[in-house]
Image 1 (tube, rainbow, N blue to C red):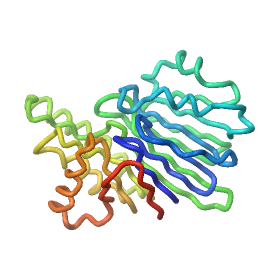
Image 2 (image 1 turned 90 degrees about the vertical axis):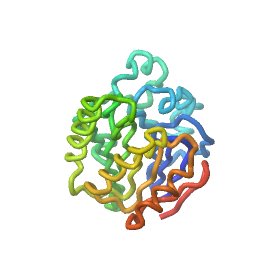
Image 3 (image 1 turned 180 degrees about the vertical axis):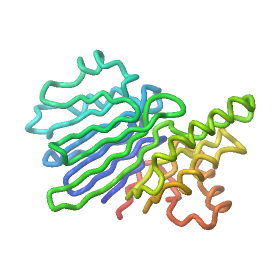
Length: 241
């Protein structure tokens, strides 16, 4: 398994038979092998998660470039997306708290409700040899407790976030992608803390930190018991597991 950090909340996961592209917004994409299935996930329509350049991946014919499946949160206008997705490819518009299947059951996609907009993704991929992988991409599902907001707002935010995390209780992921946003200042660690307390991730990647890589080091210094968080230091780097 290979994972490339593209930038912001964008990641490319590569397994033997699949590419999973999450929330591409910026960064250089590789040349995709046509024999692998490419699935493009967009958690919501905010411009730092949704770049219409994803539809340019359909260059050439389906046979030359492989088939592409687009999994888009329903807040992205379906009609506009349909105009951009070629008929040989798949468009799946998803909403929170649902389960979907792709590739004749080889992939399942489950969704959580974001505490901002759109969905978070739980993706399970089973390859021909029987090997399975599970991934969690939070999108903007996070504990958005802003210091300038009212106590009522922040209490409601925490309740909503905890409710979604309960759906992950005891679940295992080969890799998880979770926000660590420095703009939250004193409450920045809360969402990642609760995720790591609730679910089991072999590897966790921070994201949505606006190129402020230093917050990852700050988190690891404050949480020396956390051994599975990748200390990202640059965009475009690929990690092999």
